[in-house]
Image (cartoon, rainbow, N blue to C red; front, side, top):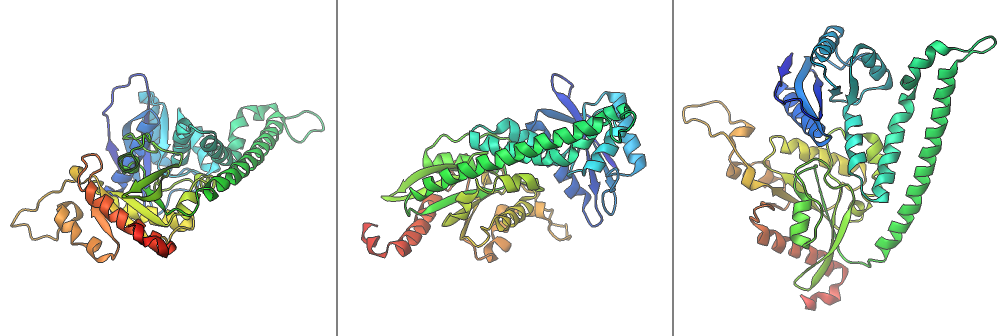
Length: 400
C-alpha cells in the first residue's frame, strides 16, 4: 500500500518520503494520522515530505523494517526523484539502519533521530542543551559501527586481527562514553542546584501544566501568568520548564510549563528529561491540557497518562482542560443515516456527554487563543488551589 503526497515544490529545503508499517489490527486511517504527525515533525525540522509509503505486516521486519520488494520500490523512487531523506515512523535498530542504508541512495532517518534533531535545534538553556546532548550520544553509541564501513577495506597487515576501521570505532566509542559520563555528571550538578532552588520556594502550592506537544500549554501559561513563554504552532516549541508565581485574589501559587509529550517519545529523552520533570513530580495539581480539535485527542490523553506513570506522577490530582474549542469541527450525520455515529460525527455537546462526563475528573472546555471560558478556568483553578492551601495551612483560611 502507498499514499501519494506529491505536494511540495522543491525549494531551499530538503525533501523526504515517509515510511510506516501498518500492523495487524491497526486501522489504515490511524496510520495516516500517525504519518500526519511524522510529517509535522519533519516540517518542524525543516524537511518537506513528498510521498508516503505504507505496508501491512504483522510486525516490522527485523532486518529491513519493510519487505524486500517495498524497500526496492522506495529506493527506486528516491533515486529517480533525487529525494534527500527517507524517514521511518519507528525507531530503527542499528542493524536495520545499516541494512536500509546499503539499499538507499539518500539519507536514512528514523522517528527518534528526527525528534532528537528537533530537540538539539530548540534547546536554549545550558540545562536543556546538556539533557539533549546526553540523549543524542546515548542514541549514537550503539550505532557507531556503521559510520566506519568505508574503512573496512583497510584491514591491518601481517599479525593484526583488526583494521583501521575497527580501531576508529573503538576510539569513537571511548570518546562517546567519556562524553556521556561527563554530561551525566553535569546533569547531577545542575539537578542539585535546581533542587536547592525548589526548596527555597517554600511550601507554596505548585500547579504544573502537562499535555501532548502543541496543545497550547504555553499559550495558556502566558494568559494566566501574564508571562512571555515562547509559543508557536510547532512541535516542542518549549523544552525548558518555566515556573512563574501567580496570584489569584491574594492567593499565591507556582505555575510551571513543561516540555510536551509525544507518541513514541525516545527512551533516551525520557531518561534525560526526568530531572526537568521534577516540577511535575513535585506538583500538587496537574492541569492536563488537551487539544480537543485533534482527531486523535483520546490517544494523546492516553500517551500523556502513560508518560506520567513512567515518571512517577500518575497519582496526582488532575484538572482536564480541553483547549481549542474554537477549532473543533465535526461531520453532522444525515437524518436517514442509520449507521452508528463515529468519533468525527460527534458535536462538542455530544462529546461532553460521553466518557468525559463519566470520568469523574474535573474538566473544562475553553480556548486560550480566543479567551473562551478563561474566567471560569481561573475561578475553578482558584478553588482547587485554595482547597490544597487550606489543607496545608488550616489557620490561614480567614485570608480568603
